[in-house]
Image 1 (cartoon, one colour):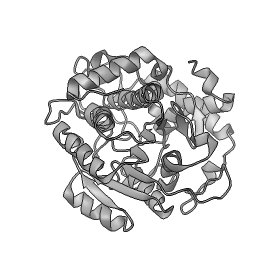
Image 2 (spheres, helix red, strand yellow):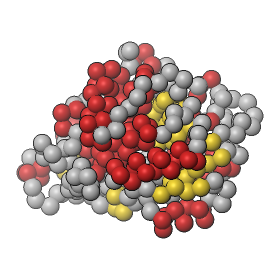
Image 3 (cartoon, one colour):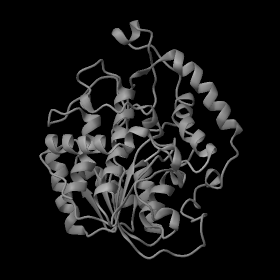
Image 4 (cartoon, helix red, strand yellow):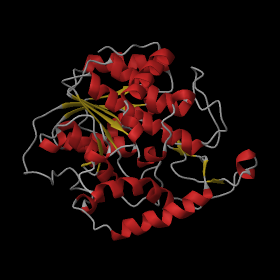
Length: 362
């Protein structure tokens, strides 16, 4: 399937291409890496999305010359683009279906991972306020208690550390007891960091939390009607190379590891869309949002980042009743071309099965 045929318009394709570089351009100023071969090669270290479970650390680097060329170009595109209705959404109106008539959707049962803060909390909150039955998720009991207080209308808050395969499997079992679900929003994730870190399973943490955990949950939970996987515009700069999922065969670049994991999320969504008929499976770039991960300099509120995931999980609008698509601001945009490759999709599924010991049926 050609990625360019999905664009809808040249402006949509331009916006998709510019998004990751706008995120970088608005990020904190680059700082030199503390030693290492990356610094000697002329790389710079960017503090963008540099957070571990909501605690800030620095990330890996990007090529300076390419960035110097692409960022100004992306910014010119950005300033030239007229804002859409979704760009004008503000807190309190983000749940409004501006693409269709104002009708109350039927109640759905939705599970949202990583919903103790940020976009996940915003998504769960929006769904609760719309009258849906929502089951939230937090990494530990302390965060679960805080989530319950923040979401008084939530059905339950499940606990499980996605950096552990054992806990992820237990979370899937617990979720099934609270289901079945009409939709599952795979929101949980971690950002880049200055050094490679491994989990209790001896797996690289970004890959395990961002990719392997949603795979395991998808494989072990009862099939919902809809699946929503959160990604990032930075996936457009990722490499479609599955030979080093653990990032242990090359020099560590935290931002590249994060970007690659977001490509694998899109690829996972598309693989499920191709394999599971009857389930709508899509990927969403929420944009650069003012959260702990996005940082105080992010331009958009949580409500805007939560709008498209909540919309895809529950809306009856024809635009939301599709599968195998990549969305940003409710717009169907072209993803990284590698994400559409069925062979790469199958290789990713097999790698996840091998690493987790959990097969994906169907």
